[in-house]
Length: 319
Image (cartoon, rainbow, N blue to C red):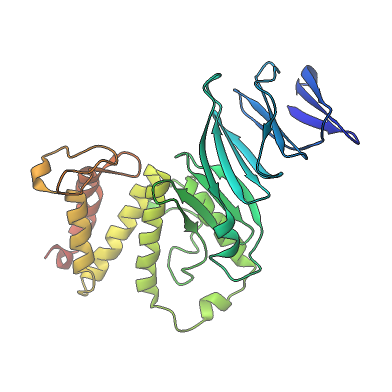
């Protein structure tokens, strides 16, 4: 356990295990505000806008680092440390290999505090790294945003934008997921659903919105894209199955032929790519198609194992 015992002008950092003190350090310049750490490092943030890094044995890994402002939120995962400072800077350091420490990201959370919603915006309640390595910012109203490193933008992956969707009130994955319900996207959606409880039934009763079936389709599209961005493969498969069945049902009424064809062609890719295509995020020259999605799932396998069986349940969607 790592703790900081603040006095009037200094702080004593104490690391202990089962009540036995392993190491201590007195920081005489300022008092501590935040602590974070993993098995590979410990970090203590101070009121004077500095952070002190420690090795597992308690050695000071380097002199105090100056941050752009006083820490507001900090978290650690694996070898990485995340901090949001008072000037809205979000900084991610990779501290996993001693002597090769580096800053891997410095962005701003300012757009989240002023852009998406009318002021006053709900307070931010935490920032952490997703399993895919991208930062996730969560707010008191249940909204959650993931930073897209290539687009250099925040994407909202959890909110209450689809009150009429049949999946909004399900605090679990579809039955087709085999009972799986502990994915990263699922946890964010549950938080958003719980936050919406206090909003009352007005959102569900409000008129002027799209029909429930159409809204369900849009909701599933957003869930698919969010699972892809998070690299959550089990959830991507589950939501792809639900979306395919939704499109198959819509296709029976002639409303989803174009989306169905587009999705199948996107998964199939160019026939000239053979069975492989290009791995990762690289594009096939002149084609612009990659053969994987959600951090490594093969698109053609998804088409064969999930989409086509779902479409086979409805002959109208096979035309």
